[in-house]
Image (cartoon, rainbow, N blue to C red):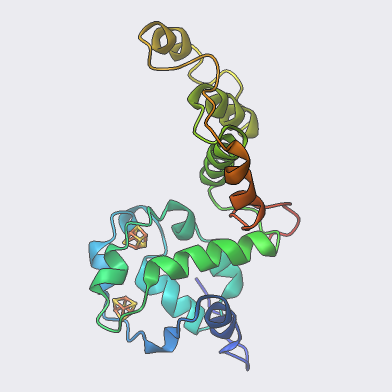
Length: 191
Ligand code: SF4
Ligand code: SF4
């Protein structure tokens, strides 16, 4: 991959810092975060490399990377970093920035799952698995995916056909309405 360096090399790192409060120039590329990361072997950009790309102002590559979407938010990286950089928070910040800028998620299924899960909790006050599965499949445009498993799970009591409500459901809705959870509102640009 060819890196295009520009004159204002701190611009993207500054954006990340403004949103997360993390100074990524503290990173000296020791690689400890990547060594413990359970997903780095599946992605082109390990956490170490992603941070280096941010330092080098490679915004387009970073916002289109799969790594922040495959990140399991396990925080192993953050715990291991000798410079106390919260690398898991960096991943979250990249996802938020990509969402804000309308960048198509590199792993759309992850975003679709988050959206279906959170919408279900917002509507019902707790997770309604059956509804969430249908919503997830529709978002992925695979409406019949794993449909054969549905009757088996229903029969074994692993899925309920109707959502179970909770008391004070409105309070949960208010929490959502007062926070901006991560889901792309639109998918316009491809950086
Ligand atoms: S939080 Fe994400 S980036 Fe960090 S070790 Fe876990 S999976 Fe890897
Ligand atoms: S562990 Fe910390 S200092 Fe080392 S590469 Fe990762 S972010 Fe950089």
